[in-house]
Length: 457
Image 1 (cartoon, rainbow, N blue to C red):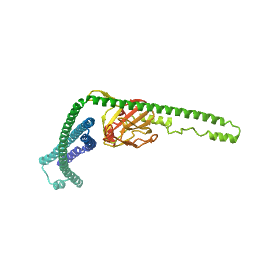
Image 2 (tube, helix red, strand yellow; image 1 turned 30 degrees about the horizontal axis):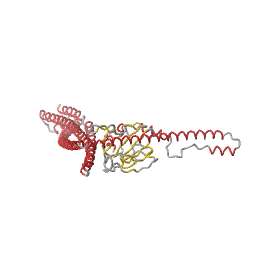
Image 3 (cartoon, rainbow, N blue to C red; image 1 turned 60 degrees about the vertical axis):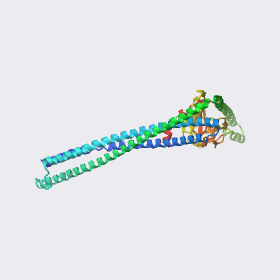
Image 4 (cartoon, one colour; image 1 turned 45 degrees about the vertical axis):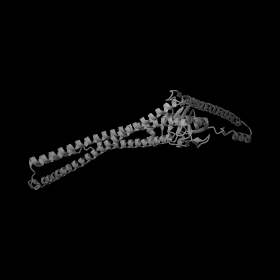
C-alpha cells in the first residue's frame, strides 16, 4: 500500500504545483515598468523646472537700475513663483508614484510570501509522510514487486517522487531569494519617498522665501504708486492697442480675401460663359483657338491662399482642438489667459493669450500648418508672427528673432523664430494668442495638456 500512497501523494502535490504565479508576475512587471517610466518623465520635468528657476534667479541677480531693477525683479519673481509651484506639484506627483510603486511591491511581496509558505507546507507534508511511514530502501520496494512491470512502475514513481522533493527544495530557495530582493526594493523605495519628502519640504521653503522677497518688493513698489500706476496704465494701453491692431489686421485680411475670392469667382464665371460660347463658333480653327484660350481655370496671381485651401486648414485646425503641440519644447505657463489681477493694486490688466516661460532664445514652432499673414512689432510684445488657419489665427509674440516672412506656407513644427531674451519686454517667454475671427480664445483649451506633451517628447 505504501507505493500506492506515494503515487497518490505525488499526484496531489503535482496538481498543487501547476498553479504558478507567472500571470501575476507578468502583471506586476508591467505595472512596475509603467511606474518607472512615469517617474523618469516626472524627474525630467523637475530638472527642466529647476533649470528655469536657476535662470530666473540669475535674472534677478543681474538687474541694475533701482526702480527698473525692482520692477523687473518683481516680474521675474512672479514667473519664478509659478515655476516653483509647478515644481512642487511635480514633486508631489513623484511622491504619489513612489507610493504606488511601494504598494505594487508590497502586493507582490505578500504573494511571494504566501507562495513560500505554501511550498514549505507541502515540503513539510512530504517529510511528515516519510517520517510516519518510515523510509524503506528503494531496492526493497523494487524486489518485492509481483512482476517486472510492477517493478518498473514502482521505480518510475520513486524517481518522480525524489525529483519532486528536490524541486520543492529548489522552489523554496528561489522564492526566498525573490522575497529578499523584494524587501531590498521596498527599502530602496521607502528611501526614495523619504528623499522626495525632503525635496518637497526644501522646495516649499524656497517658495516661501521667494514669496517673502516678493512681498518685500510689493511693499517697495507700493511706495512708488504713481510711477507704478503709470506703468500699469501704459501696459493696459499696450495690450489694448495690440489686440486692436490684431483685430483690425484680421478684419482687413478677411476683407481682402473675400474681394479676391469674389473677383476670381466672377472671372471664372465669365471664362465658363465664353468657353460655352466658343463651342458654337462655326469656323473650326477659330473655335479651337477660342476653346484653348478659355479652357484654363482662373487662379489668383496674388500670394493669397485660395478659399478652398483656407477652408481645409480651418476644418483641420478645429478637428485638432486639444491636440495641438506647444510652441516651445519645454516651459511652463507663467501668465494664464484672461484678465490678470495685479498683486500690488488689485487692478486688472487684460492678457489676450498665455505667457510661457522657457529658456532664452528657444526655438518657437508653429502649432499647426497655415500661411504667414503678418510679421510685425508691437509695444510690450516686441516681434510677433500671425499664422492664418482659415477662420482661426495663431499669434506668436515677444520673439527676440523672426525667421519667416509673410505669405510663407508653414507646416506644424516649423521654426518661426526665437523666444524672448533677458532684454525682451516680457523676459524669456513666448506669448501665444489664439483668435477665432476677432474673438480671443484660451489657447490652453486647444494645446496638449502638459503631461501628454512630456510623454510625446
